Length: 206
Image (cartoon, rainbow, N blue to C red; front, side, top):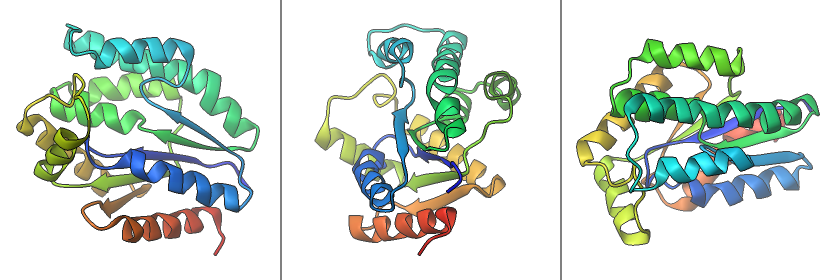
């Protein structure tokens, strides 16, 4: 079976982590060798960058933040994603470049054209085969986060920031056919049934 690259996206609190174990089980049951990773992070260097990017005490300029995201991504592409795909494995990443367009672009205001230059430099044409976008209203996501964990540097941003992030995700989903938007306000079995159907189409299996 040909290698595939899948990404999970959504605003903080959309529930990505909840569904990663389902995806892992679905792929394993069908004998699909898969590498799971995350952004920012996924490599030793990337994880160190992740700590700085998410720490609430970090004071980063907007350009520094954006460049650090792509520095982490470059290492991940070089060390994990491309080698796995070239070996015929599937790759599932918790976030990828759509997150930069949404958070640094939509949320913070970095021009899309500037992000696109970095995207081409780092990825050289590499794009996900499928992007699962878990979509929830900002108010729902905020309530979930408040009830579940200590918030990181992005999660503590105000509601209008997260609303801009959501709107950018949905705009990109309307522009790029690789997106599959899921209503993540539904119960977990319903969401996972739809995820399974999307994976079946991608794998060409029933």
